[in-house]
Length: 308
Image 1 (cartoon, rainbow, N blue to C red):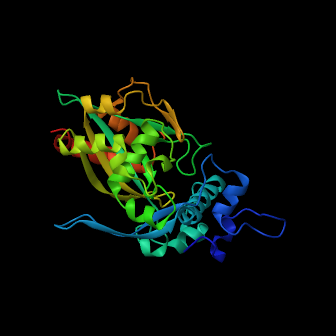
Image 2 (cartoon, rainbow, N blue to C red):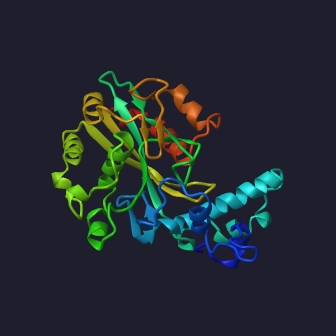
Image 3 (cartoon, rainbow, N blue to C red):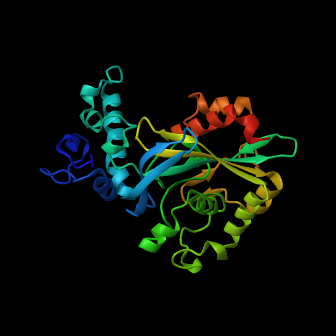
């Protein structure tokens, strides 16, 4: 399914009195584009198995709008049905969602993948805090108006060339770019570091990689999940920083970035990683994005290991 099938027509707005937009990305780009809306190359997840002795994922080439055309369409189809009659949300009222099928069957659609990272700042005492983001609907395509852990970004290369695609096929490199962009508020333009990006010349990348090698920054993958509303696919990760590394790496971190604002209600070090605050953001009382709630709950379940 690619979002241009006849079964998707009911979700697509009319472009003229007689003709609908061809796909959801076309409609969104014409009628209400977010601040950043580009059909950039991305890595499409085909399969994932994180169990057993050899966990792994297989990916292929894709484009960002591939995910928008299916995911945003099924989400808005459900929202329209909910608005009309929330008591009768049967699949026979959601023909495109029914046609897409099992959200976990990635052979049924082109599934663009995001890396959702819970960032923990660990004190010597073992206590920790985490970064929380509010996603501005005027700036983002997906998850606007919701809280989310920080940083999160589509798994994609920094540039558009085949060399970029090969160079950036690394979860870690993508995570470092997202730390730079979302936590420090830096630009997504990396041309000053070469094409493809020369990570060895990038001081910030060297700093975080050295912290990993020294055991002062731990990075973990807790699973892969699918958003039940938009069918977005997220690789759920945790980055645990010793407090001194965190404070040095993120000195002067941004309060506002290209996708929203960092929550500062609890202070500059983030939200306390406690049972109470975790329950608040996973329990449905706050508008929390599904991937963020999932990684928070998983991290709490594995707290003893993560903060050891």
